[in-house]
Length: 531
Image 1: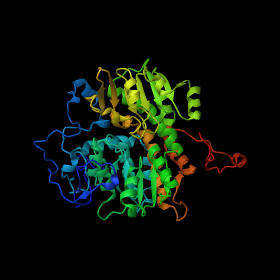
Image 2 (image 1 turned 120 degrees about the vertical axis):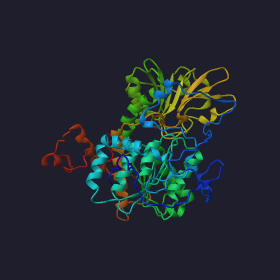
Image 3 (image 1 turned 60 degrees about the vertical axis):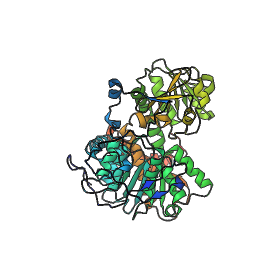
Image 4 (image 1 turned 180 degrees about the horizontal axis):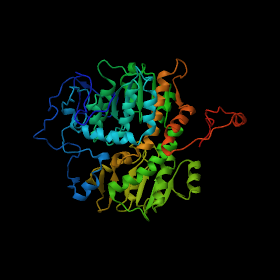
């Protein structure tokens, strides 16, 4: 598929799918969503809504104040990586949009942003050599021909490169977001403009979130046979609401701690009826995306959203897994005094050996300037903790799940929420104390900044290979269980990225290979090797 030109970024086939609306009642169980067949009438592409009203995203009450953005705060939040505009307060679900070819099977913020989004994708391609090399090598073989993939991931320029690679390799896709704040609106517009069914925009409500996933799964003349998930939400909804569809799935690829945990729970309960690939714990995901990506993006997120000075700040980081390790390296490197909380004695010992103090959160919470969660667990930071925090403490989450910080406990009549800038809220106590909450407790690096494309290339190549492996596996190779990516594939993903660094691998001699009991072409480490 050729990249669109500057004035012709919109390609695709005609689709006459009827818009679907959802009841206005809050969605607490995605399996109970009620579909309505009523269509909606809105402006066609290019028309402007003349009398738009303020959205309900920030419901103003006596306990919620909103500040106008200063020039400086606007400037500091003007990066193209998340430049998604809020100028149009009309919900995308209330619009009828089409691309230049008449394709309308999508729901994005503003299709007119497609040209800018295409530029973002082209920039990402330059920094994603591995996935581009995989696309070039496998394009003739079409290893994903007849694959119909439901994708539920963060939708950004890097994901767009993965999506277009999967399509080049023969797949059909329908895609939605796994996080309500991480979508780049202009990239979603570019994908919709290119004819891909995309249902995502930045700032979705909880109801919008489940509606978008439902639109990806339940479409006319569409039966998916693969799922690429980040967090397990698409898997959960399909299993609960469309069990017959779920039985037709050939495989699931999951890339987050939270989603993998859900898969193992399903497997243990014998409710997992299809094979699943745990790419989160593959070496090329855990050791690269989790560590190196978070090491760079935690600083970027905090700087862009708060302009904080790191030197001398006291920081407590909850969780010393690969994400925690990366964050700690970056924060320590800029002069922070870093404390660690851990439940695992092995990770705690690693933290001690790396020079960090391991403490209980209650012991240190009164004194720290920044709190970062990276556990994948729930209620790690509670209202009790936040009541004890010092004035001006910054609170954010680097784990996938939005349950690590108990944000709901802050939505009480005695506290005032004050929106400072995009993804930054002051929570004000009756005595005037305030804490700074970033991205409402959701993934801060994808909500407040962007990710290094090169590292995401490693993860994207891993996901693509996992999809190819599960889709083409002969019957019986994989049972209804959760599997790790084969070691040989991990090594292949790494090899795709080495040319960027002009790195040259040493080759074993026959005698050396025999001595080590290895094949000269790999794999070079046993499955239990931990790197």
